[in-house]
Length: 98
Image (cartoon, rainbow, N blue to C red; front, side):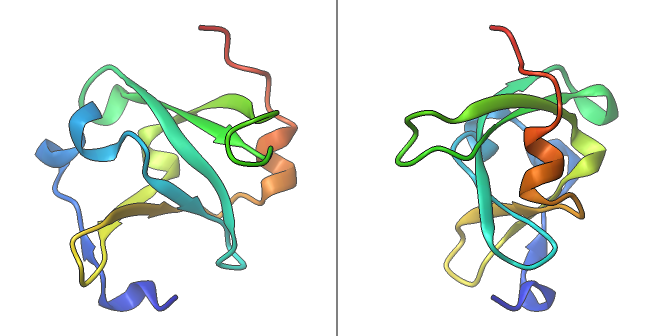
């Protein structure tokens, strides 16, 4: 997927309603997780990403700072994110406890 033609989200668009469920892609452009929760506001917001698993089963929730992800919309308006972290790097983070 060529993310260079996608429109970055504005900071005021970073809300739970906008990004919950967004797919997260790693540096190799493979799907590595999905946004499950959004906590806080602005640059201090925390994003919980479910990493691994299959169809949501067995996924490990990890917490990232919003600045670790680049949120954007594709040509169809679907929100997704990219990160420089790999799936293995995300899986090595401590598990988020709800």
